[in-house]
Length: 121
Length: 110
Image (cartoon, rainbow over all chains, first blue to last red; front, side, top):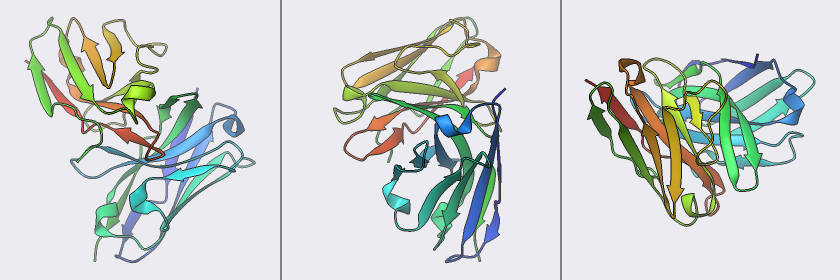
């Protein structure tokens, strides 16, 4: 059974940094694209970034480019999101997802329960 | 302002059918497959439909998807109170090089 569990969320001041982690199990982690999707309180879903199986390809939503870095460690079955220069508008629940990427197809078939990041002074 | 447009809310009676629309453009829905997600209150989203009209294992055939041009539709028949949730459409946007979602539709079954 596929399991994704996020950790590392919490309260951070504006301008600060935080590193999120996602522990994956139940599937061959190194065979899948992975992504982060966030949801601000009471708002809709926003895709943040994804990373190719071997880490050679990464894509980001415009609002986080240059501030967030997605990475993975296939030996540890783990996905990461390094978040720098955090802003109040980054406050959200961050979900780790397994992403199915094909020709003209891109969707998240498994989601973790999420971890809350609050950016506030 | 989401790239994909969905009605903010819809309601229907138990046993009835509802269709939720998702409108986009040629850079997203028009040239890429659409997926749909269900988010029950207080939980993570769950994949309902992928590649326009395919259902993952375990998703009942009461849920269906279709696409025409730059719009997609999620259909739910035989509505149950347990279907009360937020529903999101999503797809890849070739111009943005990013996954984009609709703003979500809150479905009330009353």
